Image (cartoon, rainbow, N blue to C red; front, side, top):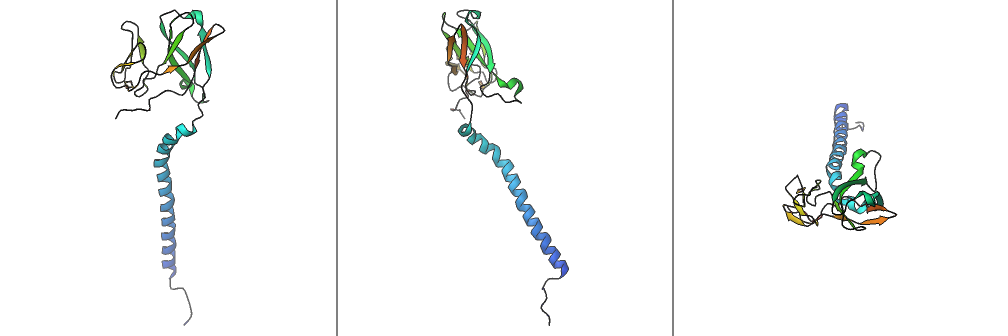
Length: 176
Ligand code: FES
């Protein structure tokens, strides 16, 4: 009796198909796992690898602003991407306090980042998303924001107001 393979050609083909399907299953499982895992992983690791820079941005001449007024100003993000479009701009509420003293509040609510608006009548910052309210000094007056409005450093140089940019200051202290 000759020594031949125990498998018939049909059985060998079936075995090869099974091996192929097992490998295909492993590859597809790895791809699906990566698709599910990567967004969460990048969210967790983004602050570690963040390259957001802090830069002074010229906002406008000092005499453009009236003492006591709070006005909306825009400036370019510290790390604008080519594809960012209008999202490459950030905003702040700039208040002239004295001849050479300014305060710049972030427009981003400390709850979930919606843009707050300044209401000069009651002298409050109001968030349209969940009813967050801030006093004129940025402290929380009502609603879910867990922290006061972020302030950007401001300075006057050569007759111009400058704001130091930073990543959008969302809170790290989220209520559940
Ligand atoms: S984002 Fe402002 S109160 Fe929720």
